[in-house]
Image 1 (cartoon, one colour):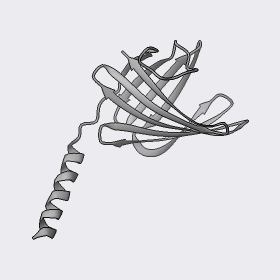
Image 2 (cartoon, helix red, strand yellow):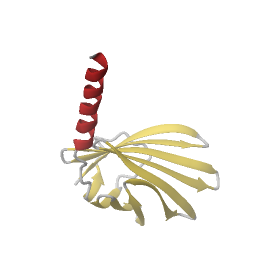
Image 3 (spheres, one colour):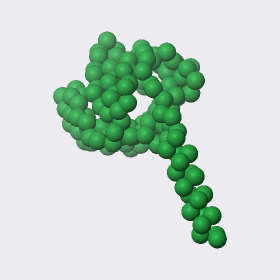
Image 4 (cartoon, helix red, strand yellow):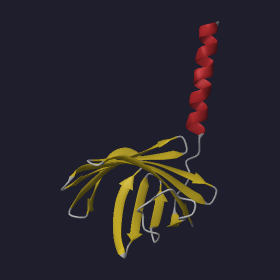
Length: 145
C-alpha cells in the first residue's frame, strides 16, 4: 500500500510540473538600476525579446551597440556571433523558470554565463552567475517593460 501511495504521489507531482505554464517573455525590457544588483552593467541596458516558444530571439542594446541572439528553449545548442568570437547557448524550462547556459571563448579564456530568467508580474528578473578566468560573480538584473 505504501508503494502504491508513493507512486500516486509521484505521478501527481509530475502532472503538476507538466501543467506549469511557461511565461512568454516577449517585450522591450529596460534595466532598473535601483532594483538590480549588477555593478559594472551600464544603465542603458535594453533587451528586446521576441518569444514564441520554443523560438527565442533576443536583441541586446548596450552602450550604443546592438547584438542579436537567435536561440530556442528546447534544450538544443545554439551558436551566435559575439564580438570576435562565438557564444554557444542552451536554454530549457524548469517549471516557469527559463534556464540559460552560455559559453564564450575570449582571448583571456573561457567565460560561462548561467542565467535564471523569471517573470514576476511586470518585472523580468535574471539571476546571472558569471564564471571566468577571474573567478565567479553573481548579478541580479531587474528589468521593466
